[in-house]
Structure formats: structure tokens, C-alpha cells
Image (cartoon, rainbow, N blue to C red):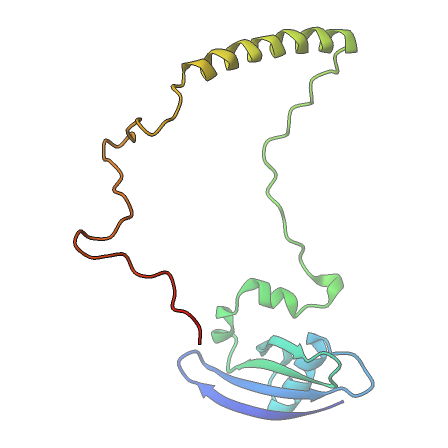
Length: 174
């Protein structure tokens, strides 16, 4: 597995070097973050704990991966790296799993009722809904052209201004 440095620049404000590497991995899958981290630390002569791989991207079917790497000058400046990126740099068996905050324990579902009680409850509810729905339909006045809109404004016809004739629909094709 070989690699080449495509871009590199120093970010003095954050105390790090930022590099873009192309890792050639012919005949093998995309290298993992630990492998890229080790290659970068050897090349830049920096301790492994100060090298962070931001991203690894391989085009479909390609045999080279583009990697973004950050190399910090000291441990104090490396403290700005987010915890999730630090977690990614660990081997899979040492990674910290995301902890979900559990809400209050859910109450137990109510005990199931016998089928006879369910049917008895459902029938009166259906009758009440039908009784309520029928008067509501009768209360609405029929919509017609004479009815005014609720806003109090009358709709204007889509006719053109007075004095100008309407445009012809389309010109005949020649």
C-alpha cells in the first residue's frame, strides 16, 4: 500500500498541519482509519495520538482513496478535536457506544378486555358519531353563485380592462 501527499498546508491559528493524501490500495479494500493514521504519522514524523483522519473517500470501483488528515503540533492543540472524531480513531473493540438517555419507564399497557366488552363499547360510540355528523351537514347552507365569500370581498371577473378587446387565442400557423 502506497500513498502520496497531494496538498499540505500549515494552520498556525489552530496549531496543526492539514494534508490531503491519496492512498493507493490495489487489490485490497479501502484502508481503515487506523491504517491511514499510522501511515500519516510515519510520513510526517508525528506521534500517532496527534494524527486525526477526518475523512476517507473512494470512488466506486476505484483503487485509490482520498484522505483528509490533520496533524497537531502538541497535545494541548489536539484538544479541539471533537469527541466523536477521537472515538473513530480507536479500534472497534475500544470505541465508546452512544448512550441513549432513557426517559421515565413506560407504564405497562392496560390489560386486554374480553371481546364481548369491546363490542358493547364500540356500538354506542358509532351511534353517537353518526348523530353528531348528520346535523352538521344540514347546518351548512348550500353554496351558490349568490353567496358572498367569507372575507367580504367580491371576486372580480377575469375580463380585460374596459375599452380593450380580448386578445386572440393564438395565431394561425403558416
